[in-house]
Image (cartoon, rainbow, N blue to C red; front, side, top):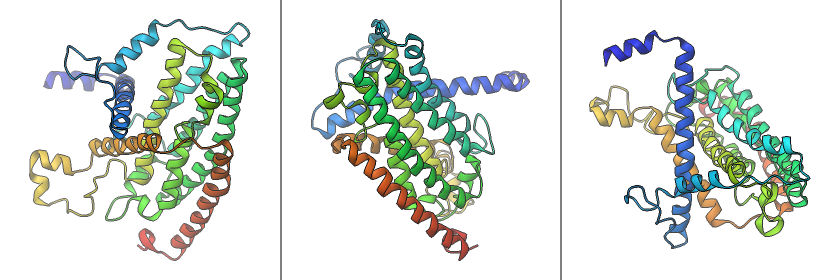
Length: 358
């Protein structure tokens, strides 16, 4: 074991970075596969039915092999390219939608001193890349040369514009609270009793999460692919692996939004007991219990899982909004709420109220 550690430390830094990137990518891909299974299982339980329970791995755990069977099916399907489409843009649109969902993880802090890149302008990087994904949707709708696909793309573009502004304003409040654009420092600024941002920025937290649901085109904001209105929206002409890439991008974005919500508002890797128990408490001396109670990657994973369950709960509960209702919510409700609460936060900072009292 010591020889392996010595050999690893002797490798160049770029090899360490490539290994870390590969590990994060593999974990994300497996997480997407398991999330599709968990979605069908959880919604099945909510609707009092079984969900996937046939495809098994070696006869064990019926249903767990379902996402992998779906991947094989999509890989074997033919990719049909419409004759009158723009074939180059039609092919690259899924990649444009997928790449930002993975590239954004470069600056997400997974634990103390554990991130692919510790960038001081990480918040700007996140905003930039999360805004790029919509171009994949718009290009796919335009390049398909289909009225339904183009209508879905235009819906998505207008929706993204509305909710991107609300999301950006919500993050202005986070920036004011942390005083830094570095995501690791934003998490560290939330230490202590009632230090998590959602306790003081609750309206901004709600706005950010709702905007995240809308930006990922998830129910009840899935008008871009409204099956009952425009068949399948922007990916109506896609099949096989090309459709699978859009599918992968949607679920990867769900995991990303859940992770960013945890980082910006719920303390990231910080334990809920941070501030309640002193670091020298006897509980932290118990080997396994001390590891679980302390700060670490497991708390970030638990928070991501919680927010993903909220994503699925929203899909199982709410009907799809009308397009005009989505626009009204974005422009007339969420944006004004963020502006008002930023002003309130400014007053709290000025008069040193709450976490700014020190």
